[in-house]
Length: 347
Image (cartoon, rainbow, N blue to C red; front, side, top):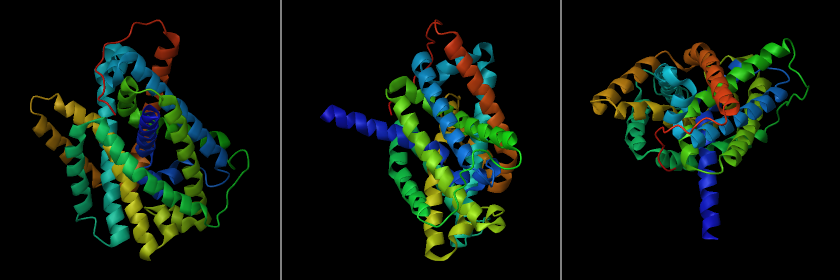
């Protein structure tokens, strides 16, 4: 019985980590969802995104288990090009971290009236993430397990609102273009979670089940959030934080701001993880961490909407290439020897 409870608890932590890597500032606010999903007949696109996220997470778990974590996966898949691939992932993680910090500034500005020029919350979270990252993926799991349920409760409450769920099979207008954007969206999210998921795969069983559960949660949340935003019209779609425009001000707006902050914190932990691990290998890790923090903060000044609009599609393209290389190596060279890469810490 005790072993069963332990396995269930570990499975919940794994699922929470995977959900937390996706439901960041752009997701909870709806900013990245309106960027990648069509405004009509979006339900099949949400199903496709959930399926692709599941397949991507399952692949990364399998690679982490077979090759010994993220370092082993890079070494085995990219071989001599592994250092270049690592720098691309680090740059992507830095951009995502900056986007999360910008999201925190937007939350404080639109939810509590604190000017973006006074980045109190983003700086506080950045310092906290640097401190807790020393605890490894175990801390990541507990943070997500504490915060993700609150996010899901809020999303579930949105499902009770009267909204329009479009059930047509294909999006109106240009269906193939819409599907392409959804593929980029899924690839981006899986790509950004790769360091964490591969390291989790090296030490944990049950990754496929956790990936399935997480993808179902993410897919359902996409449908609910988009239905609420698109039902509210152009003002919500064009807002910096579309879902806040739906919820409105007052107590509801403040609750949304808190939930958004929770979503941002869960994602910034995952995006910060590879940056922290790389800084630890430098001759002066404290100096390296400070410089990375400064770079993330400076980039965050561009604002959430600009970062989502410019950087996220590019990250999706990088993610597609990364996952294609991982799939080719894993499925086409099944008899390859196990790579002795570094293993992640226990979740």
